[in-house]
Figure 1: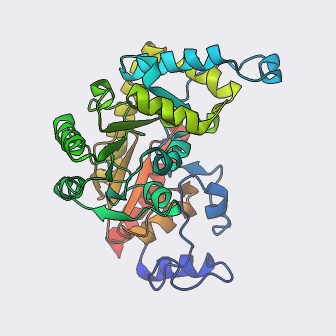
Figure 2: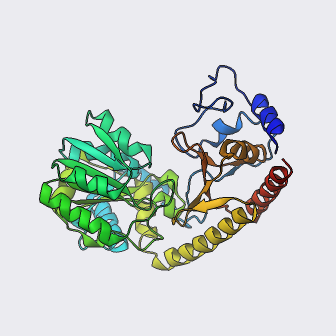
Length: 370
């Protein structure tokens, strides 16, 4: 797609009332949405795009766990204490935590991120970024000053001040940066000495090998895990906070009774103990990731990051590429803080792979001719 063609697409998709600085850049007129997965909201600006729409914007695994839904009568009563304890036991086993009393279940990891400012009494937070904006917003919404860091050394300096919550997403979202366990353990030890905290968000960590969870209990460490991304069931809304038994009990007290519903209890108890399925899903996801990176490289696009479930494309014409893919009915993720990047997840089936291949071939042909 050349410059004139791109401009025509932008003009044609320009919604009424959207300011010219919607992405703080002159011609980039389609509004920037706060999260991935906003497919209907995005595609309303691209009339005539191919359907069904392909959502590659979230980084959620396309290999969904074959969940057996509970019988209807399970929804006719409140969850019992034993059901939640069984879920905690399954999660402890799945994540390598010594005892289930170090496991806190919640309605998605986002609900547990929102809990952190109430759980960890600190003077400020320091977030290694650019990263998932939900962390910064959680602290700011609770009147806790939050500063950004671009290197682990900056987190280390912040931790030394005492009373600081240091936050790391590992693998990082959206660039897939993966820090090694020994680096994070050294930071956690430093936090313990200074009476600070290290929060490690492992939302995309189930297919990786650098989890901090087996190092618990640690006096300064909190680990977050997401269920929906790995198991392809984000609508279940299930996530976990892993910490020392004392801190975990405090978190459960703050959440109150029935933190997750019957569907989440059933899904977690089934999927988290199915280690054979997880191994197969991890293998399929790695194969799909390699296929995606190869396809993007063939189209002349540079990829980076170590996360299995997505890759980050770094391209000067990122907005034009995003528009081009939307015109082909494919939604990817763009970012205000990284205007030259797109995050692209894994296609779910051969029809989606074919759609992406055709769109990338058209992009490469247009870009080469420009």
